Image 1 (cartoon, rainbow, N blue to C red):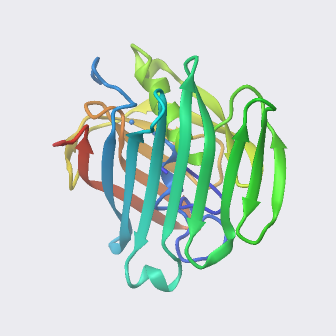
Image 2 (image 1 turned 45 degrees about the vertical axis):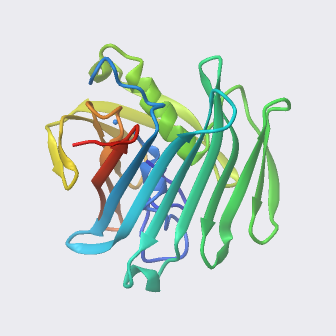
Image 3 (image 1 turned 90 degrees about the horizontal axis):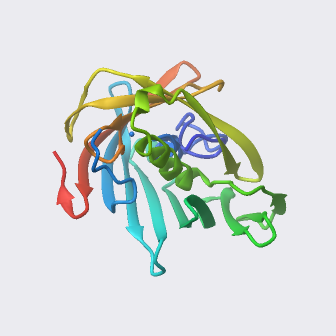
Length: 258
């Protein structure tokens, strides 16, 4: 659920440099029932591993904000004792509203314990169509955005809503989203494919496979058809290593989903 990126979870977890957010940002991807609702509050808990080696856990939580039509989405990556030797605890938080059918983020925070350089915040100003970036060491930058742009967490929600809105999700093909990734803006292209059912600690799910297209580090998401398109498995390949996130528990609208 959490995205993809240089300083987030989709890369190697054994470096404090680019992409050590595999447990969180890796989920920037996505997940059939007619009653599916991507905005239903949920808590999803994952085991994170590299092969047979357990690296820790990750948790994602979507809840309504105080203002109607607005939401708060958070992600927490907790490395175990071994992984903690290489990376700190990672926390991400996105605040966004849905306006005229589009997701407009207002705030995003990416924090790595003990790493000010790769910790940062984004403040979106939609009246001026700019986003302000600042990292933990005071480096700042203002980026110009168009009518639509997403942070790594709200991108997950936008992708799930894209699939949810289709009566034939397997025929969607590809779509490119605009992602504000740290102090950079980049296209984020996703492709939808059919896939066999998957079994994870949380249960057995019928899924669609969503992959990031044209990226040097393959990233795959298995989205549950009967659980509001929430990812139940995420796989990232980097430097010859394969990292996985497998759901161990899903609480959907206050009820444990099996």
